[in-house]
Image (tube, rainbow, N blue to C red; front, side, top):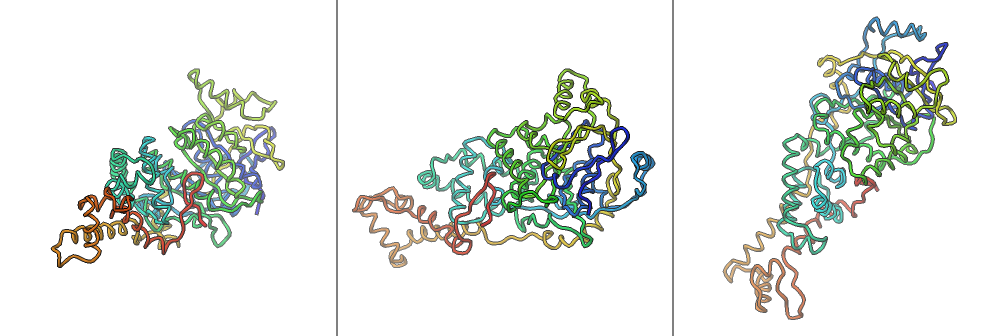
Amino acid sequence: MSESILIGAGGEPLASIELLLKRANRHGLVAGATGTGKTVTLQVLAEGFSRAGVPVFAADIKGDLSGMSQSWEPSPPFKARAEQIGLTDYKSESTPVVYWDLYGQKGHPIRTTISEMGPTLLARLMEVSDAQEGALAVAFKMADEEGLFLLDMKDLKAILDFMAENDRVVSKKYGLVTPQSIAALQRKIMQLDQAGADGFFGEPALDLRDFMRTDLSGKGIVNILAADRLVQSPTLYSTFLLWMLSELFEQLPEVGDMDRPKMVFFFDEAHLLFRDAPKALLNTIEQVVRLIRSKGVGIYFVTQNPQDIPETVLAQLGNRVQHALRAYTPSETKAVRIAAESFRPNPGFKTEDMITALGVGEALVSTLDAKGIPTIVERTFIRPPLSQVGPCLPEARARVISASPIGPRYDAVVDRDSAFEILERKAAELEAQQAELEQPEPARSKSTRQVEEQQDNGGGIMEAIFGTSRGRSGRSRQSLAETAMKTMVRQASSTIGRELMRGLMGSLRRR
């Protein structure tokens, strides 16, 4: 296999411009105005990684990447570009692809569990206030301490309902949780349901190892996420991508510098990842981007303007492809100047002027050399893709989906015993105990009569249930609600195990 990916040709005379696979995990940026060729560049890079045996993930915003699974007859402009840069053996070649779709319509469904996403990213997805985020954190803490998974939306609703009904007990143990905050979270869940996000939570949850596969010939699988509908819910789209980044960071071992990445992620519309993100989350994203390269993962952000990405993250992107930018206003002129200053200068041209003069399919390219030093920026003619450019036909997509070995693993929903069922059983037990308190004397059990005898110290039925009365020793008697909270997940604990541990972005750590 080659040690580099051919991006195109540039300089005078024209020479190959390549991305070294050994430096590909130093991340990258593909930027440029609409219609300048960013998607084709993404396709070229994805094909190159695949041919080098590196699995790829790419979010397909417009549907144009779906054609990568098909061979085609290249159009005259692409043939002309191949001739221009000296590709004498240019011919069509399909790429191994697996289609995915959060909604399960244009690919295999992608799911995760509420517990696996964690409180940090779920709070971002729900767009909650600080007080509401605190209440959500308590819900996760209660579940995590007992090793209880929240698998889907009904599990989260169940534990919030429990907190609302036992707010005094919960507040006593974890700090003040107001009914207003819980009610607001319940409304947020309803809004997520209406937006279709409920289908994203459940089992079988995505195993990211299924993204890191090669075909029988050794080519890396290109995992294409149908995001044309998903991007209409920008917060869900960005939170999903951040969750994937977090999962990779937490699951993969340290491997240092490899001869090629284990996997490469392309995040299109990258500005959505950072829009309205609090400073604490931005700091965490920067830390993950900086550290994940030692785990063999390369991240490539695709966006219109480099300014869409925070400087602390932008500084981590060593391989850069800058398509044309337009400068019609003072702010756009400033953006062009800032983009130009991020490149190592070329004495042959003024970078700032060249950015606005680039044609479609041309870009300024600077990659890291063998020593990790950015190369001098070159005006580059991007090579033509090998696979089909543009969307594939629905029938062709359906054939690829039906032939995929992944389908049987994810297409059917699994609903196993979880928080909803356990809390429902505990609620039934509480109701039975309370009903027994109201039975005539002969029907009462010994334990019930003991509760009534304790009430001779001045307490009533409600006091026995909620623990407001005191016994002869002066200590508060344990209420049925407290007992329920302590035992509600004992059954789950015995089968699931120790307290769940969370990582940087709040996602679960595998132990």
